[in-house]
Length: 337
Image 1 (cartoon, rainbow, N blue to C red):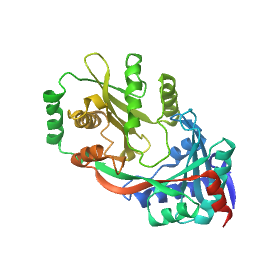
Image 2 (cartoon, one colour):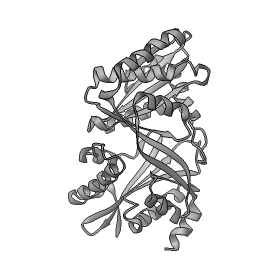
Image 3 (cartoon, rainbow, N blue to C red):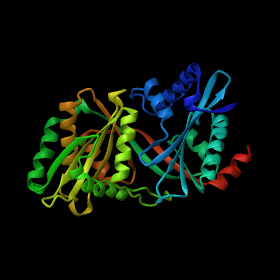
Image 4 (cartoon, helix red, strand yellow):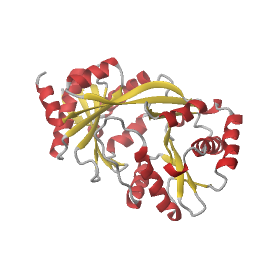
């Protein structure tokens, strides 16, 4: 078996890789719209988004792709020890997956990384794969799906009206993709508040973001052809209260994702999270009617956000997990096969 950069595959092998990705997605969420060839090609040539460097490979066995491997390396200074990996197809192709993981480890170690985080569906087979290479499960996330068209409009209206009682002084501003300069400082602060989201036992440090990082993210999304819808709450002094974002996937709108939602600590327990979600739902129905379904992920310990999502109508689809291992221990485990 050979390891080949995803973007270097010929047309037939690329279609084989696409099938691997699609099988993985539909096995996790049977209701999803599988990734399209155009979308996967855009990811294949992309090497930097969201402040991270990306490496994507296929393990090729003759005329067939066995697994796809993805490595993500944070470019900032917050987590210089960490690399994150995904191996699509690992549960069914553990031998090819171990070969791919070994290649990702080489890249990570060359970059000075000492800890490998593995990300994937929390199934018995996936758990067996990651524990076989010395990794321990450290985080569980619930994957939830929402039929946007089935959300109760009366409930959303109630959440919006309740804001008049508890957050009447908060103003909402919204934009798609490019953050207006006048909101950039507040947007940075609100984005940083996502550090409050639980990451359970993962060995992760808080991340930093500045205006330059946000502009790079915006450029990366533009090159990928995707969109980010944002709603930001501001207090009377123009300081951030919280925000919510939805990642709109134009290649398959029904596979769009609820992105961040956060309320800054000083403004919690005022119904602002529900209000933000309701306003985003209404905005989506008005301007993006083809977005009929959203998925989202929440740590199983994130009771507050899970409660809002459940009340809105999000239903559990699957569970994902993160496993982590020191790179030297992972390498030693791989050498035992």
